[in-house]
Amino acid sequence: MKKYKVLKDFLDDQAVLHLEGNEFESVAENYADRVHFWEMLKINHFIKEIPEQPKTVWDLKKGDSCWIIYCRADGEVRIQCIQFSRQYDAERSLGLLFLTREEAEKELARYKAKVILERDTKGFKPNWNDLEQDKFVVAYDISCEYLLIYLNNNLFRGDIAFATREDAEESIKNHEKEWQCWLNIKD
Image 1 (cartoon, helix red, strand yellow):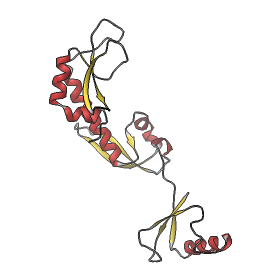
Image 2 (cartoon, helix red, strand yellow):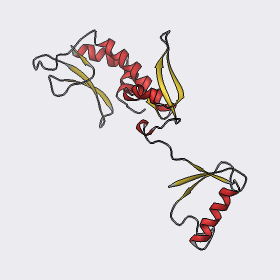
Image 3 (spheres, helix red, strand yellow):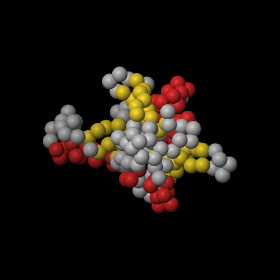
Image 4 (cartoon, one colour):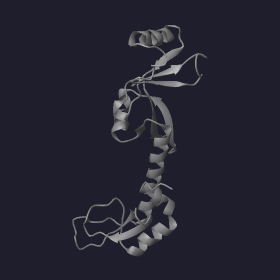
């Protein structure tokens, strides 16, 4: 589906027209007249075709605008708009490039939340191959809309695990917002 932006006061100054199907039947009776009408709008600079935007960061081409999360030499983490080029392939592969600023901000918040939650583990490093070792994991129960803790001896490998149920409970109590951010729970 092609999109066009109205450039002059022909219709609505900020209108974006979605051209599809029989939408122009009111403009002209037959296909040739419709095509002629839209071509005349383009020639007279009333409308401009909007190029198709990338759907994922993997669709980015040289010169496309995107957002990057990066760390400055002084340690400050920033989000910046850049023009994509091959020099950013590594950042794209690492998940540090985004199509919108909002996506970048959300992912940066998740990174920060994970760091805080990993501190709550008090250095616990689970041995996922040891079926006898207790590992407590926090999850979100969608039906009850509640954070819960369950014992995971090797049901699956979680990102953040605690040595004791008490440590997990304390983490939820002190950092509920970070858990909601990390688990992508919508408010």
